[in-house]
Image 1 (cartoon, one colour):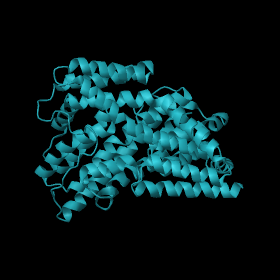
Image 2 (tube, rainbow, N blue to C red):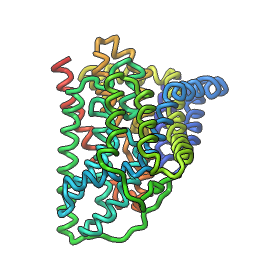
Image 3 (tube, helix red, strand yellow):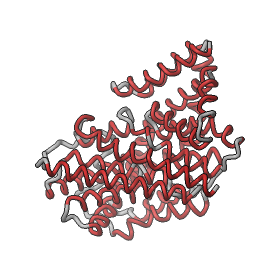
Image 4 (tube, one colour):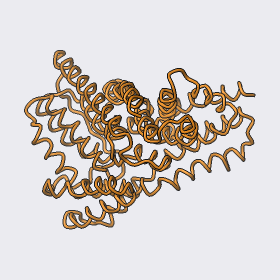
Length: 435
């Protein structure tokens, strides 16, 4: 029965990836794969779906619903007020726009500052794209190159590595382990430096390559496929840069002083609503749209976590877990591999991280690994294989830029998969040295 259960888990994981890449909703794909896991493990189907699956799903909602909701609302206020756009143009003025690589570097920094300031990924993408489109056309840069800077700036070091980030991948370990947002800061900063260095090196080499081939800008229709995208008041003047920075800066201060992400987001939203009251035509509409934008990301992650709950309840999982925990290299290697694999097969950094911490963290704590180290290493690991081709954010980014996997995914892979995975090595070594 153990062998059949292990095979069922492996097949279900492969099926989950396949269905996601074929465009099947993760809500359906996770449910189908959960049924397969239950059947091959001899689990009563009604108990598996009605109790185990739903308990995992509901547990994630209970813990993180407010964070998803408030994060999306904050991002929408920053978008509709033009504050996100103001920050983007302010950074562009600092880096300059006269050379192609400077333009790409500006996009990395814009995405990094906005995401570190609490603006959700999807809002960042649709804030940056109009600006990037203009720059690429002006400097004759091949359009596929836009994916690397966005992925590097928005979905790597500010998402999982930099201490104090309000990203959900940094909040999940806080909730599970009781650690602060700045857990293992030196470990995270080292990983961030390595990731940024590798990513920028790749972007420069890739830019040189397309320029040597004589490839320039080609017109592409940028789709706006997300509800509410592109409604950030592009036609009206953006607010003052310093004023625009107030809500995200205060959000970060509150989060890192009080270690309370809910309070930090509420304060950020209230400040944005008050400071930009004259710039948002209807604050009720912005509030409603922000709330609506939180639903699908939350439900998709919950579905993946529910699937993980069923997997964790099987005899096959006990076999796999024992193998992962007994891997050569020590507990941090086991933690890194486990989290990366879970994030990869689920196509979700937050989903994979939640599953890993929920079911593996107690074992690592018993081994004597410091909670701060588990926090940071697992967060970093969750941002590696999560960005494989079936990841929802990757698919959305490709749709938004009107590019195919064949045309542009390689830029996402090298900046958002390869670079973070490599960065885990020095991060682990530093963690072993100082903890």
